[in-house]
Length: 324
Image 1 (tube, rainbow, N blue to C red):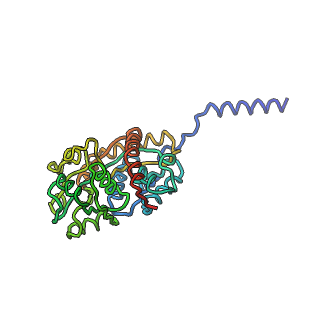
Image 2 (cartoon, helix red, strand yellow):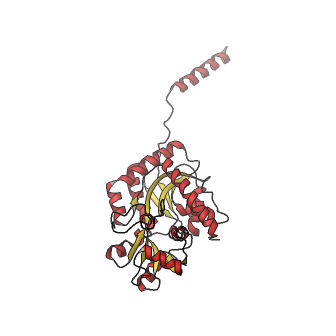
Image 3 (cartoon, rainbow, N blue to C red):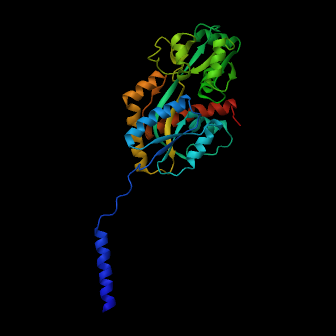
């Protein structure tokens, strides 16, 4: 009888425990969030991450710590993020290089752009211009194409496989001309040579060259955006100037997390990131440094990736462009 009574007491205790409320799960986030930037500190990507990261930190009530992991065309930072715990405490700035171009530029990657990452949301895009210096090879983009049909023209970019380089190659292919690609290690040295008259033209992103474009030290023949920029309405688009329907090219950036990050965490990050990008102070600062705010959650991000992969991967492979 004594054993039976103890059993009943144990059952009653278990039932009482089941009736009590369970301890609340820790709310996300309850500690700092690491934001991986696969570029060096001080550049445009780093500046954007710090700008949006500061606004995001205010919204989530936790520090957002920028962790620069540059090198290997973003592969170092991408591999680190792909292997990080999928708990929402590691996010990464991902661009069209990381998620699109690298799949064709490298025979092997230390990460898989599709299987290893989950899109959170978009942040901004960098408009690209075709610009000339003080010794222009042509006065208009139409004249430039006619000249390049007769003889290839030197064109600088910040590097092989960059959005700038691929925009140049796509323009050459769609107009039936050839440019002599002059790759540099970044936009700054290419721009310096353009200003010095050592090269006749280059593909320049707006954040790197806004000061010189606004002052007239370099002249924009055309912009690769689908519409003229608000800051520079007189600069024609490639589409309109050359009748190339659907032609556009940008350097763009968004935020991703490791693939297995829980739905609820991604949904919260998407909501807060979107709100951070839409803050008036953030948008104003973006526009001041030459960025176009770009909003959209996972659905819009995935649609962008599908379009970009359909355009750029075949181009890279057909031209045999490689970083190996």
